[in-house]
Length: 82
Image 1: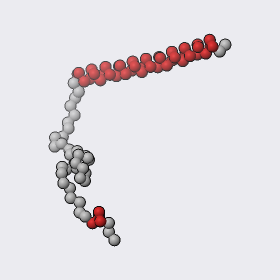
Image 2: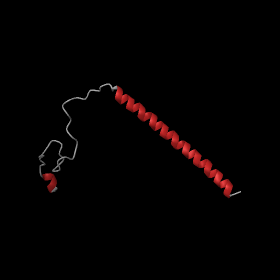
Image 3: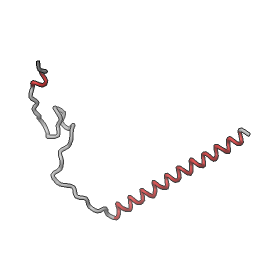
Image 4: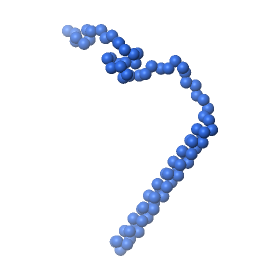
């Protein structure tokens, strides 16, 4: 006993990265050129440093606001619940 789907031979039509009869779904073919890493330029290094500094400042500001909120909440509790 065999399953009819297994008895048929599957032929691939379409581009090499097509899966079944759905072209475009599946891994894209690799480029023939190989990727070689280049050193980053000054502009990219400056952008990376700026992003790092701004992210650190935003984290510190968030922590300061959380601490300030906790202090204000504690003061409000003291005023309302003597």
